[in-house]
Amino acid sequence: MKVTRFEDLEIWQLARELCKYVFKGTSREPFCSDFRFRDQMRAVAGSSMDNIAEGFDRGGNKEFIQFLYVSKSSLLRSTAIFEFVAPKNLSKSPFFTFSIGWKGTIT
Image 1 (spheres, helix red, strand yellow):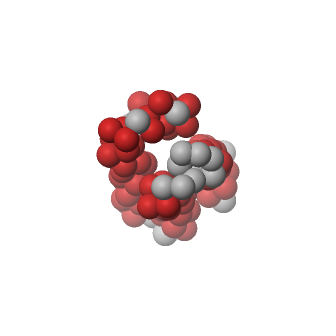
Image 2 (cartoon, one colour; image 1 turned 135 degrees about the vertical axis):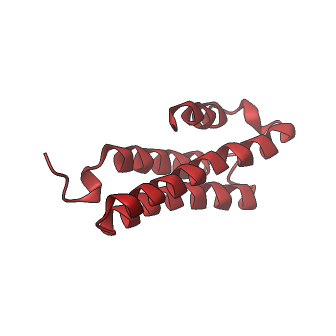
Image 3 (cartoon, rainbow, N blue to C red; image 1 turned 120 degrees about the horizontal axis):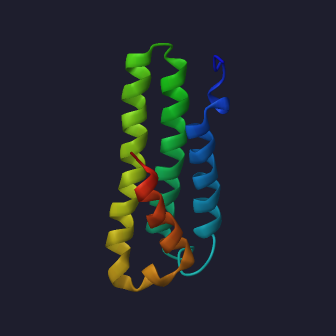
């Protein structure tokens, strides 16, 4: 079956779910009051979704693969952001635990 819309890609659907989760998680304390962290996490999640869609629209496998690598880099950046936050004792949040769990699914 040929995929004709990026919305039908499983990877984009997963990125969308993560994006929803990030927005929900960063809307609660202690994350909602750390504006820089909140905004960075939201940007990373959105960037991942955007890159999958943009790469798909390029029409060629080579460019699409490149955009998938950029998307992956965006998601891995979230891990680095969490590592920065960890010393602030925010890492005990279920949101932190869930988001770090995504690191293992990004290959």
